[in-house]
Image (cartoon, rainbow, N blue to C red; front, top):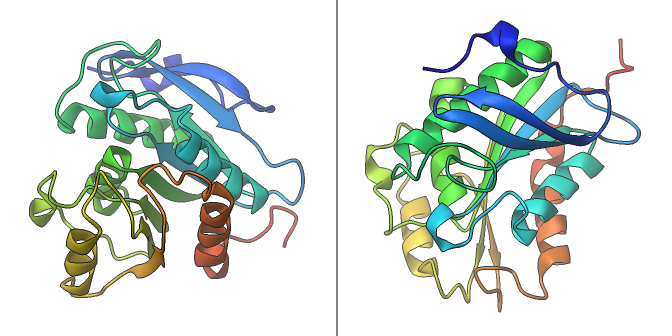
Length: 227
């Protein structure tokens, strides 16, 4: 059972680390705030597989977060259960989805007027997809979704704007499987194919930054100073 909302920390006024109470105990988080032109939106960014070195400090996750902060959104990265200082142990995606839902619940209580966005890289993109429909998010961003490694067929798809970025030289996720899955969806999301790009976007992180920013720009929430 998760702790009551009243025992959770307030949303910080400055960028920095904090700990939330999640379903399995402490969840280690990192909040980043835009320095100017803040928007009425916040994004949660999920990291890759916990058993293969994935953490909230992964360079792809960090770049996605930075890209969204540059667009004016607040971002929250967190370590899934069993990673870093987060309590618990790996739970095959189910518990990790519960962790994400808990972070989203805290974020919505603290910033009820904000649009909620979800993003994730690799395993984290699978977790984000699992939660997107239930949470009713306004934007989903998947980076290298692990199609073929997890059962995507059982996931209820979101109805929000949805961006997928996939490297064509991915050595971990089969790009052809991703492209075939996207093409077979009833409402295919926006797909950005990046040639000569590996799973971890070696030497292509700035290209990833551009793909994310260009892919979501039309769906940005209004500025906080707007009437």
